[in-house]
Length: 416
Image 1 (cartoon, rainbow, N blue to C red):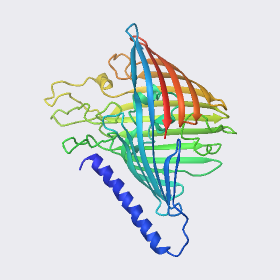
Image 2: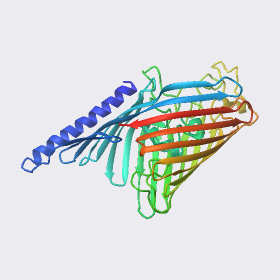
Image 3: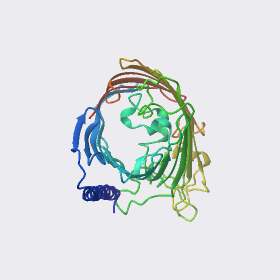
Image 4: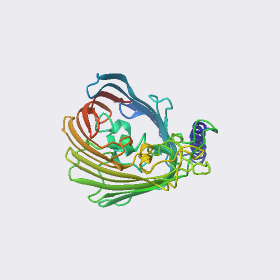
């Protein structure tokens, strides 16, 4: 059974559970007066259905991002792109009494569009247990936010270098406790191979072992306004200073992808010709502050490889991997990103970002992670929060070795 079939099966099972529960509820409450079912559409909120007096909720939505891009490396000719940057289609629902929710999310700008497909159980208001493929909380803060909630037209270089889409398949447990002082812990066990990790068929087998990780977020001054913690910009205009301090650690046992979000991109072998893949670890620290339209986000990451043994690049054990060459296969080193912005009451925003990347082996010029500094300026007009907006950004990336890269982009977004 391939991955897509598994996800569709989970979705159908969740639908059957809600349908059966709805029938039981109708049988038990035949004599009780019912309010009519409702259906409503609002821009940014999609098509929403409320059934059985709100016991069952169903939502259909999505968003599109037409974009114009510009890229110029050194003295080379500029390259222009005109495309649909993202094209999301989203289906989700909740069975309130059964404490179950689900999400199916796709991006049709990808060749393999499936992004999220999960079912969650909420035993209490403070705890959520999720199984399936979802956007993990084991990455940096920005990677936790969905693609339509970004402060700039594109994720930071830190996000792009150490992650891919941020989706993984596995089991996730999250909590949210306290009020004036909030704590939000989370633990996860995943396949360690990113989204669609089991390939398209049985011949495309998973590689390596599992990935284990945890995150802890602390809100020392209380939680953000409802919904204002789903993005970096302070669109909710916090009336008092709010701070979020977070950290995440993970270890991917047997990685065969540059950032641990894929499998089979490279393979190492022991002296007997058996696969011997390195363990890949990441540690993140982030700080988010918001106050009356102003926002600041600082992020730091360090990644490392272990359990290397004596790896060879071929099954005959003729081509040995030199110690520093592992950085040509895995993103190894540390980076930090600092970004700040201000949103006016009329919806205009000016945002700035600075980033620095440091490879673990600076003398290996073939490392995937290159020594660099980057600067980004962004301008945004929010017409309806993050639901309808026009964004422009320009970035300059200065590499310690090689030509500088200039990148510009104009993106229009509509969430339906």
